[in-house]
Length: 125
Image (spheres, rainbow, N blue to C red):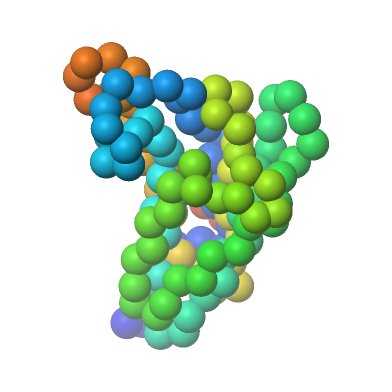
């Protein structure tokens, strides 16, 4: 593959994990999920900083993504160094040493129906 796909820095300004849901856990828990696609021939490490409306930034959270692989992680499951609080607006900054493609998927189960939306971030570098 000679073309470069992705970026080394991704920004997602509009996060907020719903604090409640109507479905069974874990399948139908309200959540936001960071999806990283590594199209390159080398493994990458992603460092994720969470900027919040009500407090100091959290992170960095570290995720490994294999070469030519995809990795999905629920923001709800990021606990180390501290959990991301539910129901509080936040934004993400994702940094990697090699280009990746990033997206956030939101699943909202607060009502009887299920709402899923995908948000493309701003990529640079």
